[in-house]
Length: 462
Image (cartoon, rainbow, N blue to C red; front, top):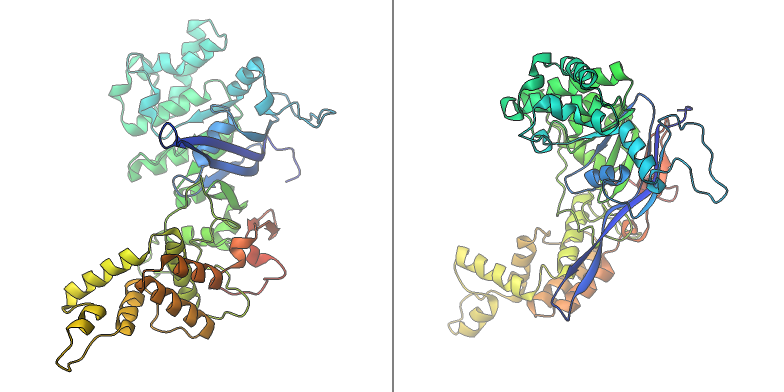
């Protein structure tokens, strides 16, 4: 797009400090809730910001609007007659919201409004909805009560309610009606930017479509730009012109919505799209099952933050395994290195397996074997461990096979550190060593995945 963005967010960060421990052993950690997010919102467009719960979407919105103070970055707002401004001699921008004083911030919040997931919590139950919707014009200097009432009644009708609803109270409205009221209140100052944070996720499915259609109609009628935040990627597709996909505090893919949906370039986007149900029972698709849980933002993985769950994670040079096997090996390595799998947990799994199938572990059977009968060996226990943790009985790659066999033997021998060190050394991936940069896929479609770098181009980890 050649026109000036209404909003430009550049390298926005919001880090929190978290303390734990006792009085004399307190540790302070930094939680990277938002860690270098950049995007533009253009006049009249709807940009979707999508990702799993906890990825930093809502924190991005609150930091951008300075409801919480960002740690660093720029939020350049060119609305409110500020368009065409150039940078100051010191490199700062006069339209940078993060540098606004109190008066400038008040003016900005007139032009940028936010609606929340739960409209009930944002209405005072002791005030009529008309008074609540009309409160913002009063705060911004509109003293004439008749004029305020006329504006509010007009907005109530434009969001699908009635002017007669002015004197009713919040408890008299359904969830969908309250969200309509929230939209009326957000629009009462005639803003240029609307930030909608999960506005339909708390509503019944039957009502969601109506609210989405209303937001789209209001966008056209008022010439609004919309930043639409949702964990539901199918909802974003219905409303948004462009889509940004967020994972663990970072944007990993952004582009025109149809391009992102029809030709996703980041494995995380692929996984999100594969989980969207299809109405055609004949079309099952290939659902991508992400392994593990989202890492903590206080200790994000090195390199690409998605590599600990990625189904396309790159194998190192010289290794050629089935991709699903490679993913399982990395999961096993991660759990052993983290201490989630250790000698004690392995012994517990073996005991559970023995109880389920009868018999004793190998060492007990050897000690009790005095009648020449069949005795289970350490190899039997090793096979049970591999099966318990979803590892193949043997690997086609000899080097990888030796590493797994040695690690399992070390765990059975109670040598957790040796098992962890061996796996960490044997199973590495470029995805953990390189922070991916964005690559261009045409028409403003960009993704941050090292598979698209020239030195990895053509690597098929499907």
